[in-house]
Structures are given as C-alpha cells and as structure tokens.
Image 1 (cartoon, helix red, strand yellow):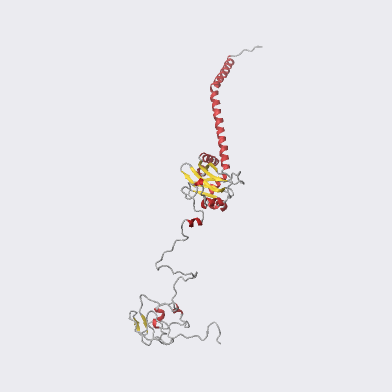
Image 2 (cartoon, helix red, strand yellow):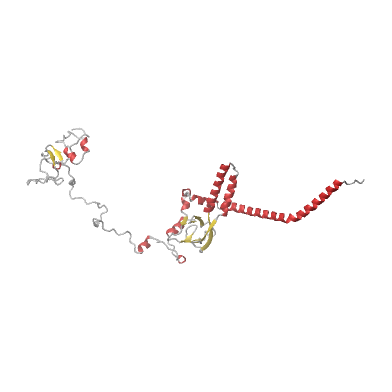
Length: 384
C-alpha cells in the first residue's frame, strides 16, 4: 500500500539532503585546517613533553650540584674533608697553573700526579674540554618565582597558583641555564685509568671549583713544584725552603741598630733584658716638682740648697734624693728642720698604721711615728 508524501515531509527531506551536502562540502573545505591544527598541537605537546622530561632529568641529575651551590652561602654545612679536596681558583690568581680567558672560560693544568689518589701519574696526559654548568641564574630564578607565587596565593587567596608557580619557576630556571667553557689537563694512574669521577668541576660566580680525589693533589697544585716543559707559561711557586735559601735570601732579615745601639753579643740563652746595677742599694727617688714639707718647726721649702755635709761623715750614711744624711744611730729621731730624706731607712721591722700604708711620697714620711713599738714575739709562733 503506497502512502502519499505530504508537502512538509518533502520539504524536510530536501533540507536533510541539503545539510548533508553542505556538511560534506564544509568538511572538504576545513579538513586541511583541522589536520594542520592537530599536527601543531601534537608537535607542541611533543615538545612540551620532551622539555618536561629534559627539565626533570636535568634537575635530578644536578640535584647534588644545586646542593653544593646552596652550601656555598653557608660554608659550615660542608664537611672539612670535602673542603680539603677542593681547588678554588679565581681570576687574577698568581703562581698557580690556572688561567682565566675572558669570554673563553678557564684553562687549568693539574699537578703531575694521579688526580684520584695523588700518587705518581703513570698514565698519559689527558686534555678535556668541558662545559661547566653555572647554577647561579637557575637557582635564584626558581627561588624568586616560587616566592612570588606564594605571595600571590596569599594575596588573592587562590592556592592553585602555588603548584603553577613551582612549575613555571623550574621551567624558567631550566631555560635560563648557562655554561662556562673550561679546558683541564690532568693524569691518572693505572689503577684509576677507568675511573671518571674526578676531576669534578663546578662554578660559583667567577670562581672555578675543582674537586679531586686526594688533598695532596690540592697541596701540590697550590704549593708544590709543577715546573715541566708543558707548563712553561705558568708561574711556578718555590718548591721548598732549600730552594728559597739557594736563591740568596737570608733566613731572617738583619736586625738594624736601635735607638740605644746594637745589642751586646752574648752566648748565654738567659741573658737579662735590662742592665742590673752593681750594688743592690735601693734606687734613688727623684721628684720633679718637690712639694713643701711640713714638720714640727714649720714649712721647709724643697727649693732650698742642701746643707754642706760635715767633714766627719762616715761611710754608713746613705744618700737619698741627693741630700746628705748625717751619721746617727738608727733609732734616733730626725733633727728638727730636716726633710723626710734625712730619716733612716726602714728595716722592715716597724709597722705602720693602715691609713699610712695607702700614702706615698712626702705625705707618708711627714706622718711617720717617732718610734715604732717592736712586737714581743712573731705573731705566727708562741714566745719561748
């Protein structure tokens, strides 16, 4: 039984046919563009994937070097054993076999010994050219970007910026990395001929750091004799003290005469540093500005000329302060009008009051008692 197609059905079928033909035409038109966009997307994704893998591998491979770079800002975190096996050279350093070439990196020659153990190098000389990573720009780029991402996350309260900042910081540091060309010449022994651990190079600013296997290699590089035909362009330090003496240098600089003339020659190792007087008499005290003295008769001026000593003065009198002292018994009182210099010398048996022990000069002698009482017995033992 045949059914008649109405007008609206015929119109619908025509619209469907037109849409199908139009879609085919449009697909034929945009298909190259779509495939071109897909190819670009695939290429971009491939590049990003390779960059991500390279970035991750680079950070993993250089994690220890980043640690050593950060430790340079806190040197106490690195062990002394590792420090002793590091050779540090800077531009302009003299008397070492290292040369900094402006714009072309470093040229370093290590000592003629094994770079691993420091023993005699039996292998051939090895000349290597290396590209040393400079971790300064990547390190601070990562730190700066991650810090900014954390600040923005706290300000905008969007913590999704933190992982985004970490990824962007690592990517920026990876893209901004730089290398320093270096040329190093060294030797190995037969035992370490197949070991490639040393020398290890790294850069900190303008400083080149060379890590070796033994601290003796570092000592020979900085202080040892490295004079051979292949290193004639470098200044070589003195190898030993004997070589220094052979060059005509004295052991010590000659001592010139001082203000008091040359020191007297003496073979005694315990020669006194000062000249002792012949006698052990007490030294004479001299006052530049003598003060007037007061006694029982009144003031006595220190500027008065000293009295002429009598002719019968004995040898027991001792001059003090340039003034003569008359011969008298040691227990007699000083004559009236005499100064403190005329008093007999202390024998160490009399005791002074406490307030006089703190006095010195004329004040002490002006208040001396006429006669000190002698104790009956020493205080530290009983009288017999």
